[in-house]
Length: 169
Image (cartoon, rainbow, N blue to C red; front, side, top):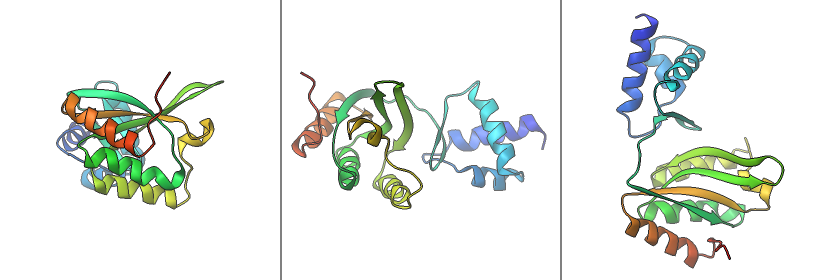
């Protein structure tokens, strides 16, 4: 399989998956090293909206609607926050903070299910890193995706009821 055939296969796998596909899984499927996959995905990103998450690569699919919410809570409440979004029909697209020196700092999350929530929480518990909200005294933003404005309203109410939502004055 040559480079262009391999890249076409990688794109096909990612575009037909509902969950992130790891670099290791792609490497095994294509019979190359993970580093080759990283290089191939970088090239594919020039033409396609591929997102690299902590769980693998996924093709960005536009949601029907999105809303940015400002939130605050403790580290112990991260699972409760993400679960409230997913259980009410939303998807967490990303997390970002506004740093007074560096500006907007963001990271894709792509949390669509309770399994995604569990995997994300496990990655935090492993100690590999700390939540991004730590650099802004727990304040952070999420872009929430959903299939309707009504669903976004439901997600926002659930987060507000838990005391996580920050209302801008």
